[in-house]
Length: 239
Image 1: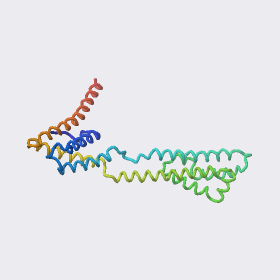
Image 2: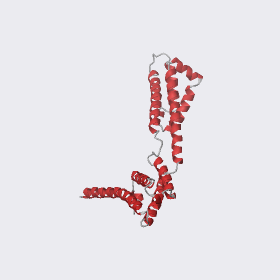
Image 3: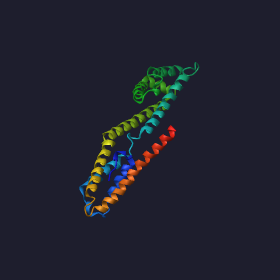
Image 4: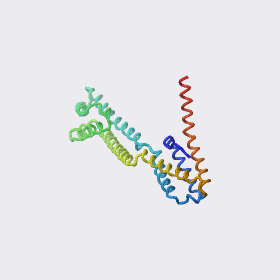
């Protein structure tokens, strides 16, 4: 009973382990009941099953991107209003718009194009200066209190979501790596298969060996068939 476990796909390895464990725990084979190898195999499979299908990262990237888009929109809208208003000579409080636009200019008019971390730093400084008593008065004169509050709120919301992503990613990286978990499962499966192969001629083990061998053959066929399809594809491409 031989199989190259390293050639099995992630899913096929999980399937083989699950089928072998179920077969061993079926109660049909007293010789293997409560064997420590089954316990070891079950433990490694349980851990493998928990992580093999998980994403490397937290999956919160979409939430972060959406929050950043909302922050950018609020920033761009306020900046565009000030830029347009300051260009209207007859507009009331035009100078207030000119002064506030100068604050935006001070911290860069392309803040929304910066990296997440750089934008967060610049936005923080921009908001801090816009919140001074002098600039708050100008914002009020232009009836922009709600617009500024929205920009600040979107910025703070982004920071919360981004921090959550960073924390989740850190936790994932601290988990035992998927490759290490797979190697442990492969090791226990190999030891189990070797045990059954060594005991196949011993009374009480023959049927158990044969049944398990069929499971191994099925798993082995999965990568042999895949290799065959790849060979055929390669041959067609070279024709």
